[in-house]
Length: 231
Image 1 (cartoon, rainbow, N blue to C red):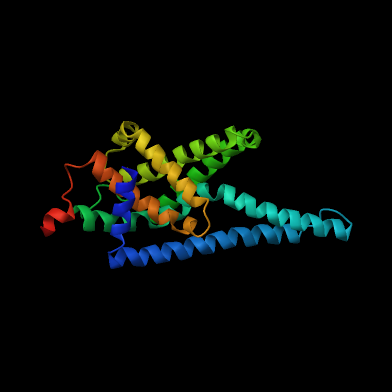
Image 2 (cartoon, rainbow, N blue to C red):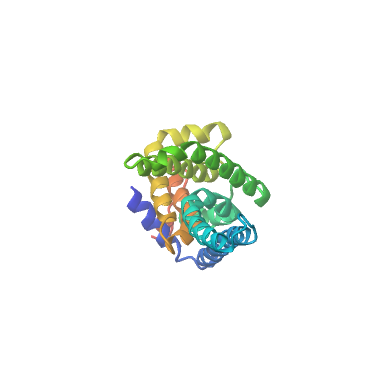
């Protein structure tokens, strides 16, 4: 199932409009990533932790390395904040091009989508901080990290896409019916978010793959695949 959805995601890039959004999304993600690192390093370098210059220099180096690790660790939970900025536009194009659906039943402004992303960020940050002691236990750490963040990321993107077309009380019910698929895709997205360069594509890929999941597994009878139109 996952391979089929990712194949459809790649195929969606044949749309010039979607390809342009893909490039823009990657650029925004790159700028956000660089900005996070730059601000963190600036805060470290402009703060005097100790009075001895050589020790301060050493702490700055350790702190810079720590910022890199922390950015890698936290990037998956920042993805929805970026993805929600483009979600409405990306979903509309995929729906129109692939399923002949030309109107969302409910629309949300980019400010609303941004708030949804920030709300997710705060919740995910809290849960990851609560789990932090367990991340230092070999064997448990990777299972917990990918399991927790995969669940959160998959849930967030699926519900963000589904709420555009489904009644509010049906969104969670739909997600629970295909929980294993949503969770599995979330884990794959978290893994992608931990891979340099590939992580820049995650906000875009997450939006597109969840649209395809919605129409393939939840709403197959309401959409007309573009292949049948072109036949």
